[in-house]
Amino acid sequence: PVLRVHILRSPREIALMRKAGLVVWQAHQLAAELVRPGVTTAEIDATIDEHFAKCGAIPLFKGVPGKTPFPAATCISVNEEVVHGIPGPRKLKEGDVVSIDTGCKLGGWCGDAAITHPVGKVAPEVAKLLEVTKGVLDLAIEEMGKRRLWSEVAERMAQYVREAGFSVVENFVGHGIGREMHEEPQVPNFVSGGLRRNGDFRLEPGLVIAVEPMVNMGTKRVKGLPDHWTQVTVDGKPSAHFEHTIAMTPEGPKALT
Image (cartoon, rainbow, N blue to C red; front, side, top):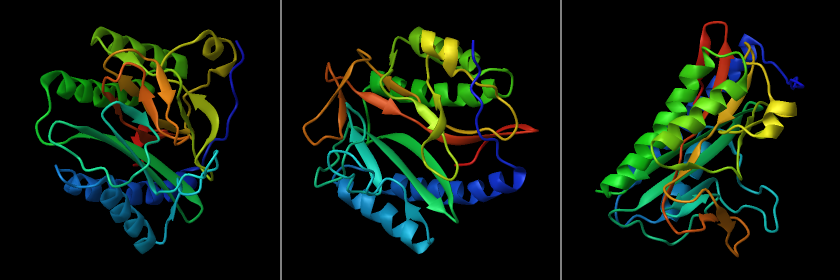
């Protein structure tokens, strides 16, 4: 198999990325305080947008090219929406789950993270979905400190989700991150022939990647909505998404966000 070679960051560069990561982390703290029944997804987005402006940070998602440029600072995806939901007038309701994904560039360096929140009290199975999705991200960070290759981590992630009775979304993967939001390598949360053959990479100091498991309650299959952005589960069952920007350091993996 061919191992991908990718950019490794110096400790100084990682410290600068940590500054961007902290701004993203603060954005998520602000969003978490807003998540409750009756709040609109546009209100959450506006709060994060304002926070980035105050910090002198550039929102990474706004204007991302597509059939139509992405219009907001955050992707907010509710219930069966997996990723890339567009914030708007929709009001959150008791029992919903809401995934908030956002990133910024500060001083030329990027940070990117996602969290899925329960809105009020959610069904036990939905609470388990959130617990497992956060759990698989935590597992990935821990395993990154013990394994040599990403495929070894991805394999354990997929197994963890499978054993919980859920499915890993395979249409979307994590990514390298640094000066740009999306850099090499691609970071899947599962193992495919392609990863083993020519997409694998070493977990070595200086590597910075955004690891972002997306987990569905039912089928792993997703489809796009007519807005050209929002991705939903084909069976209409809920989905969850957690993400951190993670740096490999000589002391092991560190979440920068």
